[in-house]
Length: 208
Ligand code: FDM
Ligand code: MG
Image (cartoon, rainbow, N blue to C red):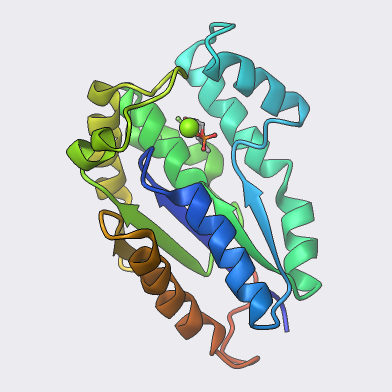
C-alpha cells in the first residue's frame, strides 16, 4: 500500500516544524516508514534563489518569486510520487497553501496565485495549526527573514482562512506541544486506518 501524503500548514511560530518531526518519529515508532520534507526546499537551484530572497540578500518581483516557490514544488513531484508509491508516508512542512497565502497577503490576486500550483499532487490530509497572531508573538517574536512581521503575518492568516476547505483539519496550536501532538495523531491515525481499496489513488489534482 502506498504511503500517506500529509501536509502541515500554519502561520509562523505555530510549531509546524517541531510537530512534523514529532509526527515522523511517532509514525516510525508505530512501525510505519515515514520521512520529513519541507517547502521551500532551499537546497535546489530554485531553492537557493528563494533562500537568498527570504534572507533579504536579493530582491525579486513578487510574481517571479511566487513562480519560483511553485517550481520548487513541481520539481519535487516525481520524487514525492515515487516515495509515496514505495510505501513511505511523507510529512510535509508547508505546501501550495503557504504559497498562495503568503503571495496573496502581499497583494497578488488570490486566484492568480493558485494557478501555477493547479495539478500538483493532492495531499491526503492537510492539518492546519491554528495560532492567533498575539499568541505567535508571545512565543519570542519573529526572526530576521522577509515576511516575519506582524502586519504581514496577520494578512497571511486571513488568506489561509480563505483557502481552508472541508478537507482541512484544524488543530488549536495554542495548546501545549503534547496536546497538539495528540490532536495531530488522532487525525493521522484515522487517515492511516483506511484500507488498501479505500485509500484513493495518488492524483495530480490539486485545485482541479
Ligand atoms: N513561503 C513558503 C512562501 O512565501 N511561499 C511558499 O510557497 C512557501 C512554501 O517562505 F515565510 C514562505 C513562508 C515563510 C518562508 O518558510 C520560509 P520556512 O518554513 O520558514 O522555511
Ligand atoms: Mg520561517
